[in-house]
Image (cartoon, one colour):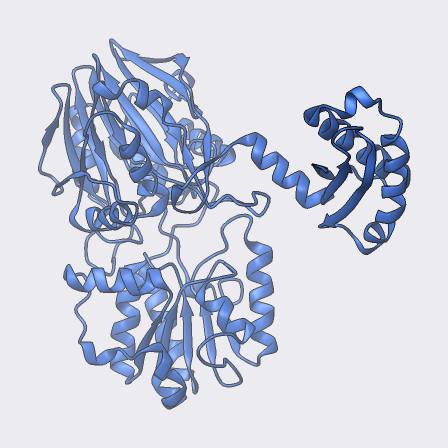
Length: 548
């Protein structure tokens, strides 16, 4: 039997990770992470729950990487470090360079194997894999054609259909069509833009928009974009060279990715084009272009520093700031506040809502998704990569393309979709979910810990100290209360709460006061009870017992 088991990416944007299993062997397509929302204090990254892979590590024959974005390879170091056996990782040249950086950053060794589109290779004894070129926002992106004894699968990866991409490498529809003619058991296709009814625009639209905006600009130009969008970086550098502007790079990932792309030959620009960021204030404003991170309003990123006035130069009247991206869902408020700050500084701000041509998506919209369905003509279809509404809409498109309801399989993370004798059906589930990590994966943040942190942010914390005489258990001092995260009114109430808590504590028996654990438990109870008398909050209490 052939099984398709998504571990992440079906019900959320990010965490993309999908297992294909056949006759006791498995391969994994992507190992992506997700970044936390504002309501997750102390969480830096989120990765899929890889329990199923760890429990069956001997069956895992390889990891296939579609492209170099964090939501597709960012969890790879954590997965490889937890497996009991070494696993080969397959990817194109640039994708492996991005993976190698993440692995080196966390000190993880890996067997990285470079692949080329249209050159089939075996993974274990059950899988014959062929990468197929796709157009996305990062170089060297691919989908995969996976041939198994039960039939052929096509996994598109993230893709769009751009008739004139910057690097000249279009999505290889011809190869998908040939596979469709041979017969495709199941198509797994990117659903991110399934709600959009207009054709996803070509990157040439952005190129033309930048040309117009840059020619009209009289001061500095600052462009904020994803540092991995190297196709866009490529034409920005070419435009700067044509217009006689020097380029400064801001943001660690921007510096790293541009340098990596130059070393690998994806960006062919002279050293003389670049200047150090610190020299920007010394150069004529009309001769400078700054490429920076922070288009999503991240508080520590480069653009936020410029907007707050803490950057290496002052943004002001005459300067043009371009946000070359659309806000990721959940980031709208932060991006809006950033745009407001830039306006108050007097800069002209161009962003997608007022200047649509500053950004086009890297994902296929509904008409392009339907074109792939019509071309491949799969026997079954599973929408991947998207939130629930994206998956449902993509499934509706598949039905519009002529697939019967039984051929359309709406899977969620953890589902097992089994294929036997050409028929697909749900056959069970495996452990799945999200693992919260602090910075650099130094520790796992449990759901209970996260809930406690959220509660702490809502209610505050009170430290309560009592001093007891060691031999008589007499209350010598306290409870002494000090608070963190309390309102001014609540801080003022602390002495009254302390007195009420003392009254309650004095009612405890001598025997009870002799046990430190019970004293701490009772101290927590009486402080919280006293707080309830005067406020509606129930703060977290940290009890301490001192014996003299």
